[in-house]
Length: 101
Image (cartoon, rainbow, N blue to C red; front, side):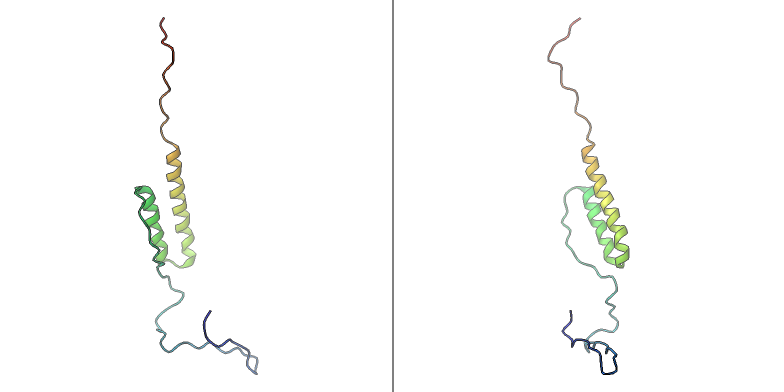
């Protein structure tokens, strides 16, 4: 919340507009996308690192565009985890008995 004077109805029932500080840049748009600058530490796994780097794409989108990026990253991370579970099966253990015909 701001430190400005609380907005209360005037005698005419109107709510006055909040005051904007004189030092505020009129070209600055509070609703414009702004990078969060969240540090992303590499994991050493190229697939995972690529997905984490993809999160930076959300920094340049309006909030309603974040969902698409997050869903894409989630799908990529899920696929990477699934690939870990799909390792090739180990060879069958050798038979304890030598079979001779």
